[in-house]
Length: 583
Image 1 (tube, rainbow, N blue to C red):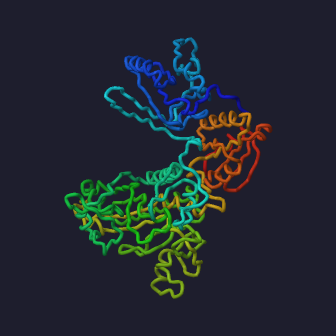
Image 2 (spheres, rainbow, N blue to C red):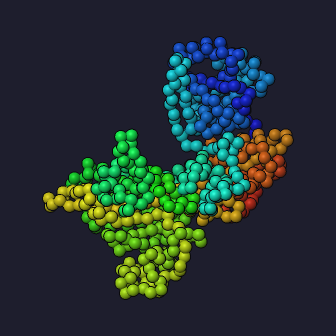
């Protein structure tokens, strides 16, 4: 099933720090340990390196030198599925530090005492994972930083600074936040304000990527607008007044100029587009962003589903006429349905008619059924659509309301409910409300001046993440859909005294990551029960367990987190299962 790796990385405690020379001209990587006792030699070595024009990399992270594989953003060289690096013990320290060797006779690798030098010879397969290069210039303590970012596909659980918790904070009432805090995905700063930790950030970024892909498909162009808002811009629309918009966070510059923290961005973007829209040839335009919003909510008790600081994807459309606006509106509606289907919520999320404001009978919300949802909806399951209670009186439906329903293809007799649901997205027709206020006009083909027709379309990635956490969880913890899970596989080693399990699991971990499988490797020295409970809580879709028993049978124990099904499979079958793409 596995063979012992050629080399291993060591715990940083065995060395005060380690420097690495990377020579682009020769494609050679070398690890050279040294400490203060070797400073004179190091000074000479640095001078020699700089004369050669090579770059220095210094990394003071314990993560780089523990166990077989480095932390994802530490430099790694993998040649023919073998990790090359440093093997050492504390007893060897003096010998390693003093040892030098200039023998280049071996084409692949050479050991200098306990230091392995690897050359990237032609034809060898070399891969870097999230390589961060620190170029240190030892003159006047001036450093320049060059970062190369690649996809992180692996993580050792022993390196995670976050830990699981048995209990959530006593002041937390939302189930989504309780689970995410206990599992180490988020940290509560104060009511309605949460920080995203490594695992949580990976989930958030995957949700964002799904949304971004669908926005790009329908012609969206991504921007990032400022959070600080000019009072004068908002006074034009009348929404600077707290009696009109009562969720402002307002502040002042040192010169007493009033500013606000953006709650939404219709005003700012409409003003901005005046510089870019003048003719019918400039239309249509679809602009979106992922941006932090700030809303001074009176109550913020829904975890990350309703916060005072949160990320929103807001898309704004600018069209020449109502017909082209309506066509794009339908495209967005379809894109949103695809988004929620891809995120694992499609079978319980309904396009829902809601209040349309001044410019249409209805807007549309996307409501996900859940027993603790904040909204009440009625569903026509035959058509897969719903209507919000705010625009539907089930007890006494007026003739006008019945006609309005009929105009959109709904008959009251087909509506079932009430059902509780969570709003995960919404789309609105804005008409000319903002273009009129900001004088956003264009010259039509006939030479006349016309106002731009606008729409706005929102999804909160954090709100979606909280909904997934709450709706798809079970009694044991989170259950992430594969497309947004922080990792695809949770690899768990149940170590034996002889060390065979560690050697084989380390090798399997390396093979998996080389195949591009996203792996969280539980290499912690903990009891099996604790590891299994943590795995259930974290909710990664698949689990592979390696133990002395599985080694004897030449299998791994495989578990599907969603179904709970457990089976024993070969390593070959494991790779086949993990090679399948998420639905």
